[in-house]
Every structure is written in C-alpha cells, then in structure tokens.
Image 1 (cartoon, helix red, strand yellow):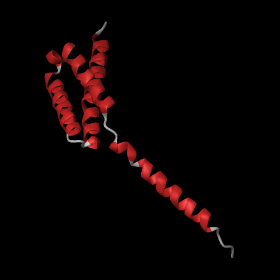
Image 2 (cartoon, rainbow, N blue to C red):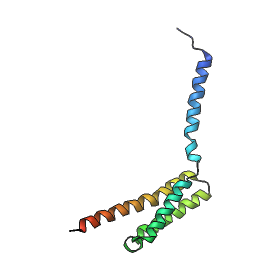
Image 3 (cartoon, rainbow, N blue to C red):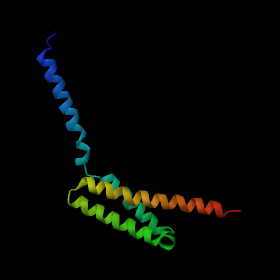
Image 4 (cartoon, helix red, strand yellow):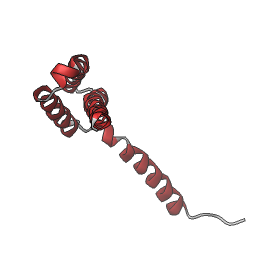
Length: 107
C-alpha cells in the first residue's frame, strides 16, 4: 500500500473546490446583453407587422421584458436572464412562422 503525498491530496481538493466555486459565478453576472437584445427585438416587432397580426404575442413579450427589467433592478439575475430570453425566443418563433406562411401562400 502506498501513501499519497498530502500536498498532492490537498491540491486536488482545492482544485475541485475552485472549479465548483467558479462554475456558480455565471449566475451572479447581470444579464445586460440579454435584456438589450430582448428590448431591441420588442422594439423591432413593434415597428413591424406584429401589432397588426400578433398583438397578443407582442403584448406578452412586452410584459416579459418589463418583468425581466424589474428582476434586474431587484438584482435577481437568474430570473432576469430567463425573462429576457422569453420575448426574444417568442418573437423569433413568431417571425419564423410568418415567413413560412408567406412562402406557402406564394404561387
């Protein structure tokens, strides 16, 4: 039976603890880029045909964005990130669906 060097053992423990600690740092970062992207998506949708053809989706995206901004002010970054991604994905899904329906209508 061999004995391990205590320095190697504790170095491994510290390395594992450091990796675990650093993995949680992403949740503490404010989602400013995500909120900016969601804000731009809602603004572009407001200027497009969305108010006419998808007013409920646009309204829901605005509410999600406002909730995300409120969560950001409250420093709940995980919730803010989730809410910031919701309008972007919702409006992008709607945009893709509209493109497919336009293509289908063409002769």
